[in-house]
Length: 454
Image (tube, rainbow, N blue to C red; front, top):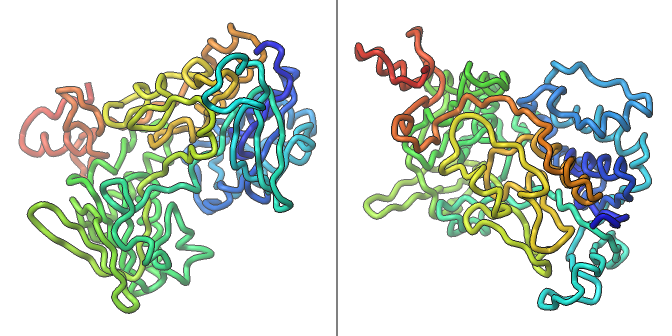
């Protein structure tokens, strides 16, 4: 691929624009296709949310060099931006005031990618044929050709459903008007929808606890607002995170604040609640959970499903791709990010080698590269596209080089190691000198602790 000149990049979010900046620095020509009507379209949907990481972790180096040449005033590195501030102070200047401006096409939704003159079955000469990217821009189908493709289209627009088995709950489509996915702005533009209502939030990740925290704030202003946490697991403490052990301070603080709300009873908890069906009952919504030996239900006004996301791989089905059967991420990346076994510490930096597909010149990057895994960090995406751009340009040494150090998470609730399977459980909730909930309980029982501090 050393002779590659044109690189198509799917998606104009932070990682997609970073990819374009690195490609441009390599002397190659980026073409960025964004489905939304502006850059950062998905990020604008959660613009009210503050990022866990400060500006220093959210600006790509190649993008910063382009911006500096355009006279950009960089934000204070230790400040925490919201999604909207990321768009306004970083993505819009990068897309509008630098050499990337002429490379970006918005309102251009990719519908399919193939090789010119080759269907998926044909092999001989395949790697020499350019990619053919088909997209819609409101004026009918269009085609652009490229020598390489980086898919950074993300997963925001393909959320996981409410059903505990990975399928939509029975009745989910019929009750869609009472369901929101992701992180609705319950304190801002969607306040009227949730104020004074009983609102169930399904999920155990940061999106769920952030939304529940906002609903608890709303309840202080509007009597009758009742947040209910629907938790598939049995231990709420696992969602509280690493507390003071988390080097992303804002993330640790969110977990600690949420733990205090749950302990104070300001958020009702329904644990081991695996949604199976949804039924409209007049103006209300019955959320049901069935198991082999029991049937439960809660009756609410609104349901927010924050159970993560999954990649849309339909438009790449004519390419030769290989994904892990469980996580739906590149096969070589799966053991590094599998949430079933991944524990404390960080994901090892990775790049072109782990992300390349059987289709030469095609790469997944950014959130989409993680498939269904929820542990993606923006810095990881920037390192991915730096490596990929080097690989496309034929600089194997740079592609293999590691240029990233990630902050520790302080979270070890998912470890399957024998001595850590019950470790952590979030920050300690009392004045006991303990590093986590498990350590706290152990010391309250007169023991030396759970051992995780060592």
